[in-house]
Amino acid sequence: MKLPVLQSLRGYKLSYLPRDVMAGLVVAALTIPVAMGYAQIAGLPAVYGLYASILPTAVFALVTGSRRIVFSMDSAASATTGGMVAAAGIALGSGAALRLVPALTLVASVFLVLFALTRAGRLISHVPTPVMHGFIAGISVTVIIDQIPLFIGTHVTVGSNFEASVIAIGASLPTFEPISLLLGGIALIVLLVFAQLDARLPAALLVLTVATAFTSIFHLDEHGVAVLGSISVGLPALSLPDLAAADILQLIGYGFVIALVVAVESLLALDTFAMRDGHRAHEDRELAAFGIANAVSALLGCAPCSASISRTAAGEASGGRTQVVSLTSAAAILCVVAFLAPYLYYLPQPVLGAVVIAALVQVIDFKKIRRYARHLRGEFLVFIVVALAVMACGALVGVLLGVAISFGELAYRRHRVSQLGFLGVVPDEKGYQLLGEVPGARPVAGTAICRLQGRLSFANINVRVDELSRKVEEGATVIIIIDITQVTELDATATDRIIQFIDMLHARGAEVRLVRSVALTQDDYTRFEIEHIMKKIKIYPSIDAALEKLPQNNERIVWKPLHAKK
Image 1 (cartoon, one colour):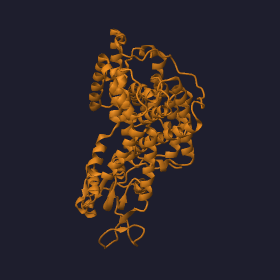
Image 2: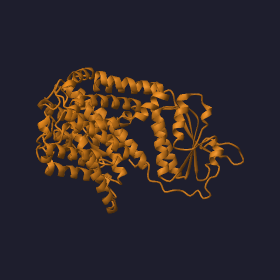
Image 3: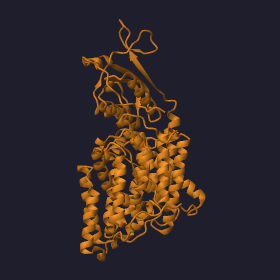
Image 4: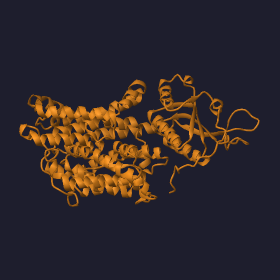
């Protein structure tokens, strides 16, 4: 395993620069408010979210092999860290938290590097999507509840668990500050409305800017509205975290869980955008990059960072093509810390709470939850169990339960195999035969025909898609026909992966045709997943039907490499 230093910038063209810089400014505008909120969730002062979005982001941009991934503070890692601080009996934002959080970050960074050295990336990526969605939903609801005192201006310390927090907040409701609630409520409504219009709009930054100016002009801090207060200008000095901030076994246990959350969340983002770009993600090399960048975050006294799907998507939608986007974002946030820090004094805490709540509401994938509830009862049960475990017992129990479910389900499904074969024709014979097994079988000119069989699930879909990717790349064909007539089971993870693969092929100029009659199965589970795929592509009743009306000139297309050479 080699760390691809500067690989993401190789072959850079000056023509990319204007859009990369503009996309970087968009990412910075999105990062500044949410990173400050996530820092408070993790147990640190808000300004540490800005610190973590400068040097760690820049270091990751230089050592990653991914051209697009934005690395910064994000919801799951921040919430898990805050949960670990609370579990240790330490108040968020206290001096003890300032010592413990960077120690946890350092231990998590060591585990991330160990994951890379032991090549655990592919194993970690086998965590099913319902488990991850359950964890994210549970942690998001927990954090939203904990943000309510900040949002409504009550002075209450939330409890050590979900139930205690709800009771404490309920008891404090009669003491709420009307102006705080009004500010926070207006900000939350505006943010949720803007989120439906265009995710690239820096709505959170605009809302914070207006609210800060309003609070300063009318001195709302004198009327019960909590403000951010004074923050120092410039970056803190690098220093080794205090590993005596907690019991060593506690540090190791908590650090391992945080590293696991960072790895799962980040590898999900990595796989998503690697598929869009038409290449395979190198999980282990990227785990090392996550570890190195988090070690820098620890030296700054910051919380763990991870890949951000939302900000990566925003950078891509704004025209960004390389890690110059992240470098530009880091430089812009550095300018804010260096020159604008005094102007953040009047930033109202209720509005910052609204930013966090809005961000977490958008993190919860309600469409997937409805999909599980209506059609995938087993996966919905897994989702519910993990989400409730996180809320009732904390992030540690939720993560460990999710891992146990993942590996238990993986062991159960190992014997439920699937097969992949590539088909061709034998001259003067009807039907389609397996290439390489039937003498005389040869591929249809300009077309790749493959047949998937058996049960496709999170346990085997990555292997099948990789095999299909290699074969398609070798043939470099315009038409790809995938026969799924003999597929007997599709889970949500396999379906999502197939749709990503189809989107990638379409983006590269190929046409994909699926063969399967939905009426062939009486299994609601499988039929619904096939119908989900049909929203993206037309399905034909037979290979013969799929081969009709082929283009007259099946010229080969020029592929981007799906797999980088090792």
